[in-house]
Image 1 (cartoon, rainbow, N blue to C red):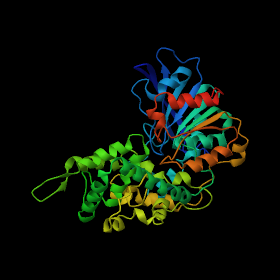
Image 2: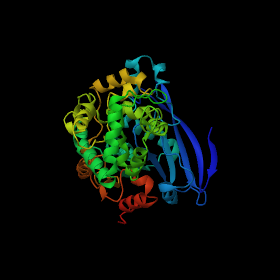
Image 3: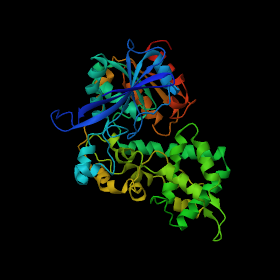
Image 4: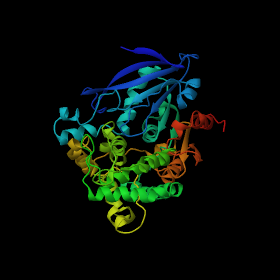
Length: 433
């Protein structure tokens, strides 16, 4: 059953599709994929081509818009839009600490989640496409991890694409997760330095909070253990356009006076719980390194291992001296599965995924070198989440891909720029820029 309803400037319809869990076993278990169709309330959409949107992540459902806002308003000028909740996310068949025990123990859960990477997501799209377009190719818009999926789409099923638009999501084609994080930690250090240059008062505030956490066992409402490394992981905010400001406001009123002396305020602790918990998107943590798995090597908690190569991030050494505390960015580490109650039941499952060596290759470099699909990518200069040099190297490996490299936006450029990022990408694939 399809439900249709209106929001300002847009008519929406909820659609559900049944797809195989394992596309190599089409008669086996099936799961559900939810997608929301959007058409312009004034222009209609019956005669327009389709654009399918793949959200960043992994582990996030598609953006829930309030009417025709942000980039969606621009897309609806030319397209009917399908906002897909990738498998395991949003309103698709869920995968989290509550549902995964239905699969069995950690081994069964890990085997199940091995089907939740870009290759399976693209095959979901290809299973859905004939039902949506009647078999016609569609345009894919991939944000961040959605761009990884779009790159795999170009590798595996280019016949399904009329065009590919990628924002902040050109992956390394053959690099190991270790290569990703060795490139990431210097960016995290640069982003932290830029934050402190903007807000020099935060140097002492961050050190004071870290020193307090080092001396006090701090458990947030709901059971999250707020450690110094957990506090450092607030650096995830620094990859967005307003993230530095949001981090500053989190730090400025951290302490309140109490009869026992200064203490972290209830408001600060609640903000930490909201900022750090993976309860809303556990697959981001569970699958984050698995999205890089290929080539017969385990990811083996790469972010945590490679962090040891950058001693300036060690909070004990920082607090023993007078250096600024460094924040970390998009780095999922094993301790998170001890700190976060939403992840604790999945710790063994995550360990098994980290040990896995049989990941299939995600990108066909020969096919990409012969690409004929009009493709454009926005590359955000010094993107915290996706390495710029890796993205440029991949761009050179995809025949005909046109790039727009900009430092006007951070990783969330598509979301915050209104129509501008999408408008630029469309101009590039249409040969108008």
